[in-house]
Image 1 (cartoon, rainbow, N blue to C red):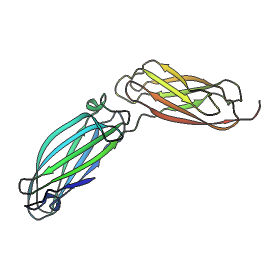
Image 2: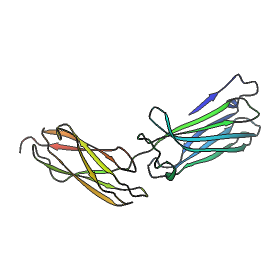
Image 3: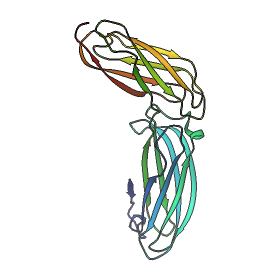
Image 4: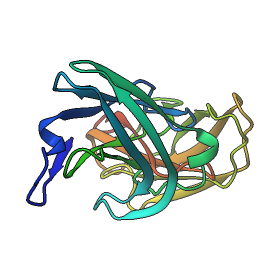
Length: 231
């Protein structure tokens, strides 16, 4: 998104001379580096020297800033009617312990030039996806009978994760939420976390599962379970 800030421009306003946008070029996955290109376009025939201040921060869903992730300054000369791209890289090592539970990163570039009034603000929000996991029913569900379920998780991160907590709930499957804890899991290692449910209503039900670890929070998954009526 581009925002134009103008304060009674006496010289030509920069928003009339320059356009910009962020383009995400990496995957939106926790554990991967976040890579964007800031694309700036000179809308006139005259070359411009542009000052660019780039910031990135982890934010809540309300856009409240929590942790600064990146702050850098660059200068770029853009020829008339041409464009320039500035790469912006936020490595996993930078953000791994600084994300909020919303996995949201706000990136902002403030673009200005000595020959022009105003500041061109270009910003974007990147929400990273949590790792995936599987939920497997070990045998056919039966009404009022204990049923085993496995949560299967393969750690895609480049580091070991610990403090694994799995919470499950589901109307007709569990009268109250249940929580199971597990040990640490190394990179690319797979762990099976067993859980027991006891369906108390027949019909098509949904088991909702939340998985949190030291490396990420609140990964979500669900399993569609058909509970036959009677034995």
